[in-house]
Length: 328
Ligand code: PMV
Figure 1 (tube, protein in one colour):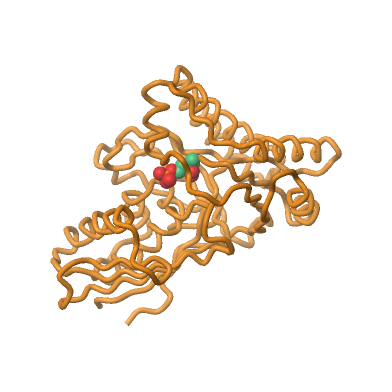
Figure 2: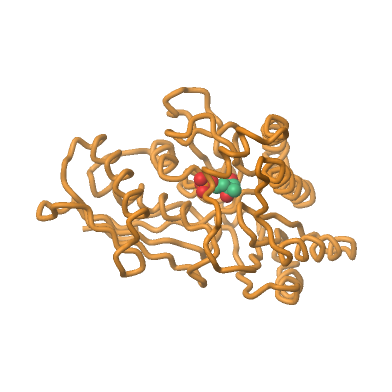
């Protein structure tokens, strides 16, 4: 087989990954836990084509920017090395996000690329190996391979072979919802690797952040196993705030939020004081997210849409694993 097409979902970390023990291999300093977000998906087709002289990368139907295309080629090189092939590929990738901008697409993108490229190259990888491969493109992509509620283990091996994600709950097993508030659709001013490295090297809080992340992961796994939203929500909120605290203390400090992000945090806490079990989280950007059960989704979505500075609201439920969607 030389052609394959795969679909993978974005994921939202409830226990954040923010710090690497190995930058080249994308090995995390601590494990993390995420929820796959249906319907935020990327579909990618890879075709290893003997007539091509160079890789050809299309993003949403148009030639991709040089930087993105170079990242895809570096990733394809890993797959070619492993499969022992030398063929160039055409790659066509589409983000099926309700809004194209402002949300992380690297997790869904590299998970879809890993599955499509490995299949097209004839590699027979199990889910753990695929997750470890996707990790090489973008750390968080490891978690989009198993989907559901996924734990990405820190791992101990220097080669990263035991640092992959596994699912601890599948869609349908828990009716969690995520309401994404979009505050700003422009590109992030600082990439995640750069932000992590600056924080590791200069933030006086970095070591404590990593210690907390490890404890938070153990607590979060227990909360998921007990289907305890209140416990999981509290952990998600403190994990996000601690990650941002570590980054804020870097030199120079990294401020990823805007005013609307902070407004949303206060709004969600005020809803909680009034009795709605809804919790705030936020990644390395300004978009606030609310975690709640399906019962409270309506209230959370309405409140998020009315919060100051929110330009769009996207409702998500727990999604599944990365899948092939027809290959020839
Ligand atoms: O996968 P990366 O390198 O884009 O890093 C993602 C980092 C955060 O989104 C901030 C946290 C996470 O665990 O997804």
